[in-house]
Length: 227
Image (cartoon, rainbow, N blue to C red; front, top):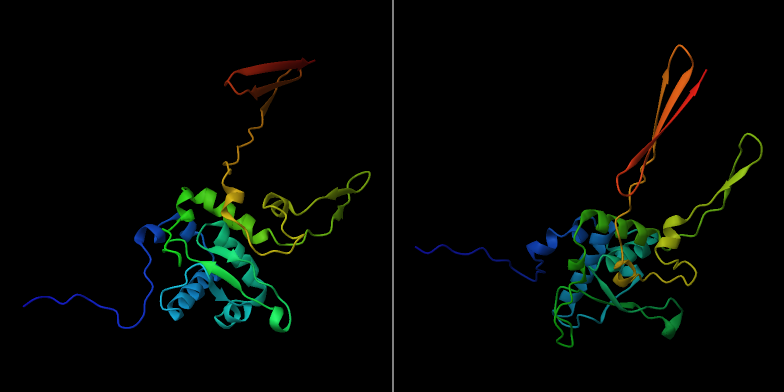
């Protein structure tokens, strides 16, 4: 008696294990996963065709369970991580001038017969993926107003919006799209090593030893003795 293979009745969307184990897919937020799922559903509604010109409106994303203020950050996150490609920017307008954005799923063939591009495979580490996802979600945020920090003599100012500048400052043109190429030159941040200061007390005075670390690993010790 031959064993029957498990089958799925109805339409389905397959994703490879390599994709599911990739850093880009693992760091994706819940809203980002819903973005991918809704675009995959739209592909099924088109009979598995038209990958590259799949129209999904903001209303359809909202009806699928994404908060209206979380749609744009989730779209930027998916595009920056290489899990989704926005082939055409939509326009919010009235009447006949309104049009939705068009999308392409990068791990599938396009409607023109082009091979999958798989931009998500370029991200090799979790640190790189987390940096991209965090910067992409904050790219459209408006910089906060500077708040005074009162010091001992005069107030100083603290500047905000570092992630906004680092991600390309797309808040000026108000475009939700973030392309993967903005983050291809990413490098892991270097750790800032501060010199360690050791202080010992003696009968004659205070002896302080400061050690500074250079690039080559050499150290220089400075000793000051006060009587």
